[in-house]
Image (cartoon, rainbow, N blue to C red; front, side, top):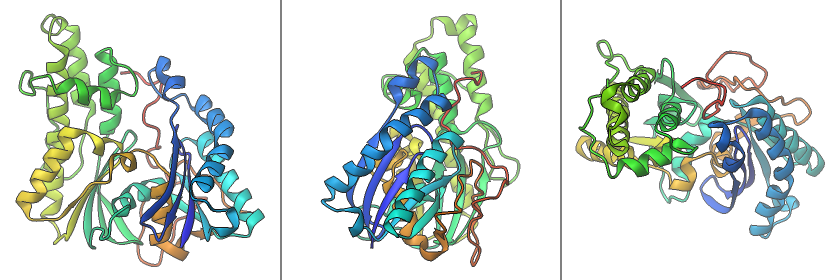
Length: 360
């Protein structure tokens, strides 16, 4: 099955053509970093206007690279939520129009499910069910029990900032350009991860929730103090990064003890972080559990993962192109026999990586 994927949940305008939820025939993505960098975070109005300007050309580009016409596509998959409402509306409206005009099935996909199914892209064999997914991005940090394509639930999540948000805000404190996550990763390679003892969120008992607001705030106060004014930035970046990775791995290990998982998956934009990836792979090897990490270009927001999710979840994701609505708070939870509600207003964390108006 050939699916055209469309992803516009935040600031990346992305389209893709994917065969059988695995083979990426074409992959197109345009980021807006240059438009948001001076604000230190995503400006929603700018993001939606850029999607409006770019999406039609991105669809044509993906189909052109695949040497296909819209008539050759078996269906259209689009991110319905969660995310920035203005950005989502552009993608959903475009997908609805294409599906209606071409008389193709329309699949409404949860953006976070897409990140989980990115582990199946460009692989002959994907993770076996049940598997445990550590999904770490700018808007989300959560552990997900995945018993099947339509049977998954969150077992642990951040209580405040997502890990990616903490990376971006800490990078701003260090004077690094946006987006901050990759910049901290690069800077930290020349630093000492043991230089400064930034706090780690300690879970009570066997709890799986996590918190990253404290470590970000600790870095801020340290830099404002006498000791931090002349501290090497590389050491600060490395020490901060080590604290975040330690918390994530601690919760992963705790969660893995709760069920006989056949695989573990690391996904989301922060999955591209070199220290987190290395720690994740070392842990999985020691635990004897097969590990899956998407290729770097499929860690960040992309449309191939949306098409993959639609393929794996099948008919449960089909919707009427005349009634589908974008939902910035689309619920994550999926259980057998229960599809997503595209009109629900259940509150979850939105998918924006960071907000320019938020304080550090």
